[in-house]
Length: 399
Length: 139
Ligand SMILES: [Zn+2]
Image (cartoon, rainbow over the protein chains, first blue to last red):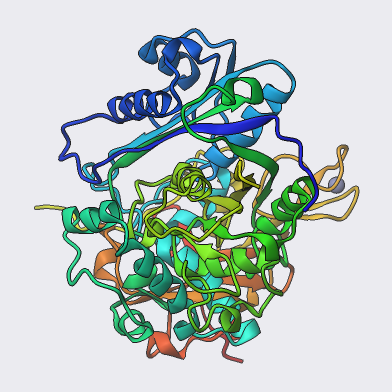
């Protein structure tokens, strides 16, 4: 492995404990609790934070609002909001600011009460009566969120012969990991999942069809939740409580519908190579892949786009449990249980960074032995139409 | 008496798309093309995405195309669509280029829909505006 620049590292993480706050906490309160605990995890405090990153899910004018609410006076504010991948964008921007000497300690937070608010993220509606020109052309058709992803899956099946059984492998692997994560099991209990256990391919393809060809067990859950990540300079990181998790590469991209566009690939095709080139590593070297699993097809598409396998070959490639943490031949996928089986309050990107950091610290409940390199890839917006992609590659301090 | 839930209709005062929706009342599916560089612009907007000094003019589609992808929606929480399940949403490529999201109607069962299927516009009329739905092409 080539030596990467190690200028900025994740030094503090926290994932909110509950997936159902029963409407008793606000997203701002969740953000603040996670921020305090992530700072404590790092051995830092509010006064150390000089850069704030926020995707505006908690309050309008969020860069201003959140600074006052936390009681900090940042000298750098970044409110990039590109959906669920915002946190991968934030991590990349924080690293750049730290490298440039503009910041020393960056704080990223996320909080959501999607479950309490009864938002239909995973299997239901949303998107009707839009206000942007593009949405004003589409809202009449009653496309649900899952139908958007289902159309990507249908086209993938049409072009490459991908099967429901192959897509189900994604769900089976994430549930396999979720059952080893007490927080994920508790989440499924809180959200009243029926029959909480490891699943099989048959379980998935025999579950209720929500929007052909996607079944219930291929759709993410709808939870409350939140998290925080603290990113610090190498100088600060050396004195933190936990070993640093270095950010060694990052790439960003967007994609939207165009005439003749290809629904079988995502913006990861553009963000991935940039991140890998900067990190000086290849997909085959990645031990842990944290890939936004809104739906099974999201992961399959992105695995191909990032170069873990060739375009169109993802279906065959994921067969046989390759993505489980205790198997070789591929990265361990979403070892916390993912959005499918652990935590999905609407914008899951921050949890990808958190679990990647746990793995590289050796703290995961589905720990990959001697994990050295992890990837966090967020997909914001919708795979089957307009979306953003943020790829972040992380290295443990032990390598 | 309570009003039955209806299909969500477009905002007819949205600046970029108002002209498109006005023309649907005449059963015209319009799209834009740049007089300067020839770029077909879709969805409608004010500027050309192919050049910076373009001028867009409206064209009218012949109303035929093919299904690029589709899904059969079996669960919806929307007050109107929840009573329509199962229904088909599809991306249709018009022969002139524009790809638009719509519903496939005029089919015996949703399972009869397939990628590549030839379709034609099947307008659903509302007050002052019509929805560009599609049905299988009949010669
Ligand atoms: Zn032009």
